[in-house]
Structures are given as C-alpha cells and as structure tokens.
Length: 468
Image (cartoon, rainbow, N blue to C red; front, side, top):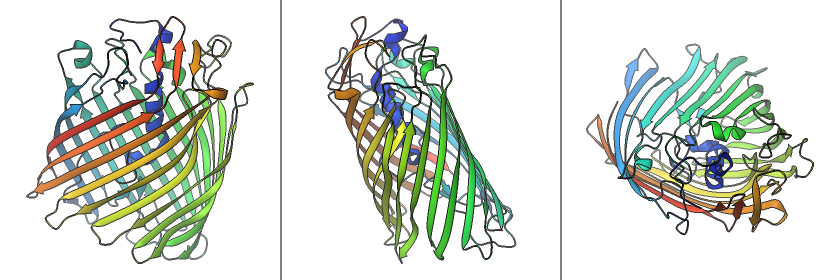
C-alpha cells in the first residue's frame, strides 16, 4: 500500500481496508450500546462517560448532561499494516465530548426499557440523547493534523401508550461520523459518513397482554461525504413483524420476520464496473427471550436468512442458518457478565455479502466506592462472498488468497474502561480499545497500487469529565 500525499486517481482512493472497517461498524448494531459487545467505541460511535444522578424534571423525567476531555494516543491512524509503504502512523489525540439527554426510561443494549404492563400515569415512555465529539490528532505531519474531526450521535426512543392495547413506537439512530482514509490520501479525502436508521411501528396486545403482535417500517440511509466513494451510498427500506407470547412475567416465546431492500444510489453497472448490487434480504427467527432463573437471562434465536442479488449474474446469494444464543448472569445489582455466540449475514460494501460466526464475552461491575469497570472481548470469523471479478466488474487487476472470489478474515476486538466518580459531578477514567483484522488477502489495482488486507489498531485514552 503506497503513501499518497497528493490527489490520486479516483479508483486508487477506494482502499479496501477501511471499507471492511466501515463494515464492522455497520454490521454490529449493538456497538452503540455499552456492554453489548467488545467493539467498544473504536468505530461507529462517540464515547462518553456514564450518567450522573441527573436533574429531575416533573415526576418521572430526568435530564442528563456532561462534558469530557479525553487525551490519548492512536498507534495506527490510517489503519495500515506494519509492512505497508509508509508503515504505521501513530499520533497523540485530544477529544472534547459533550452530551445531553432526557428521558423517563433507561436504554440498555439499544432498547428502551418500557414495561409491558399498562399503568394509569404512563402515557409516553421516551429517551432522547445527543452526543458530539471533536477528535483532533496532534502530529507534525499536516496530513494527520487536518484529518476529519467532528462526529455526532443522536439516539431517540419513543413509545406512545406503553403497555396499552395499542402502542406506537419510534426509534431513530442518526450519526455523522468522521473517519480518515486507510492510507494517507491527502487532505480532503476521507470516509466521513452519515448513517440514519429509523423504525416506526406499533404493538397490538389483545386480551390481557400476554400475547402481542408488532409491526415496524424500517428505513436506513448511508451516505459518504467524499464524492469519490459514491458507490457506497445506499438507501434501505423494509418491514419487520414480531409475534410474542409471554409464558412468564419476564419471559416470552417469539417469532420474528424482517425484509429489507437495499438500493445503491449511483449504481449503473453499464458505466461503472465498481457498482454495488441492489438486493433483497429476508430474515426469520423463532426463539426465546427472557429470565430463566433469579439471576440469569437468556436470548436464544434460530432462523433462516436469504440475501438475494438478482442483478448479479456471476455472484452468489446467501441462504442459510442465522441465529444466536446470549446468556447473561447478574450476581448483584451492580454486576453483569455475558457470553454470546451467533451467525449472521449482511450486505457488503465490497462484494455481495459477508457472514459472521462470532463469539463475545464481557461484563461490567460497579464497586462499592462507585468505580465503574467494563471489559469485553470478541472474535469474529468473517467471509466475504461475491467479490467483483478482476478486470470485468472492478478496476482491480487481480486478487491473492481469494479462491472462488471469497475473502476470509478473523477479527479480534478488546474494549476496557474504568471510571471513578469524585463527588457528585466529577469523573476521571481511562479506556482502551483494540481491533485486529487478520487476513492474507491482497488486491492489485490497475496502475500498480497493491492493497494488503489486515491491520492492528490500538487506542488508549484518559479522561476527566463533569456530568449530571
């Protein structure tokens, strides 16, 4: 992989490593929720601290706000391999972060904790949070100092008439994430992107509420701000339905089906060989979710998935098992441990699709002196299928170690953080994130550019914060 200090041809600016890095952020929705997996805040979100006691507004709502200053170092700013031309580019970083939120229910693992039972004084359950960060790299090199900086997350959850016969819900995840290229492509070239995900639906509970039927309209948009990576811009619309039968106060059997149609904005295979393929995706699950003992919860889902690429005469479709098992143990009210294994698939920004077989371990604990500790670990076996045919469907000249146009990667991630409150308002802490992509995949572009897959990235930070 060569270092580019000036604008390069458009085809040469589509580095593969960062595309797979973006796939990591987009393919693991739980990465938005603390404690859900081991990807931490390295990709796809803006880090912040745990909330304080908050300011009470009315009988049930609480307002939270805060500001944190994070200082640390990144050993691999451009997601390179050590042996690439230019090598690893480390840099110190400074990141001020501010946030505010208001709600009458907590959000855990990206889900609003709205009780299934109706109560007279509950008309709306909600939680809205806005987080913004400004990441500045401190280095002598201008191409590092001027990397993209500003990122923002908006998470909104709203349930109208919770627990009633008819409930209506809205969930919105919106982010503008600043991300550098996977090599020094010169000032102005980046992977800055806008990611919007909306779910709008209702739940119908006939009888006493033990049985429920839910339906949602799904809408997603992914848009890259740099004009030379337009091939990744996509629009997704679909629907989801769920039938749930509560067999105990905190346990249920359920059937879930979802459909998604992915449309790429600028796809024209006749004029652009790097065009991504429009597709339809179907997923159906049957399983159990809930409490199985006093201190244990279990999510066990098994199903079938199909990703259909009708316009691709040469590439494969995905058809096969999807599902997973997640067990969580709560030895005290201040402690949680979890273990998870699953198999999933997703539309890919390069090739047709990828599927993961993943294992995750993690937990968090709040000590008696109020210190909060969290640790997570993930291993993901990932296979990308339907890579573009060199010289025919792409400007790539050839691959190495991609038999049958399939690439195989092993992703390893570690996330750790400590936070110690000082009084009611102040917090000091530290956090560490690592992600490693192990693969022997190599792509040779027309014009002589060679792109080696794989990287290792470590980010460590200390922080001081004031929050309510």
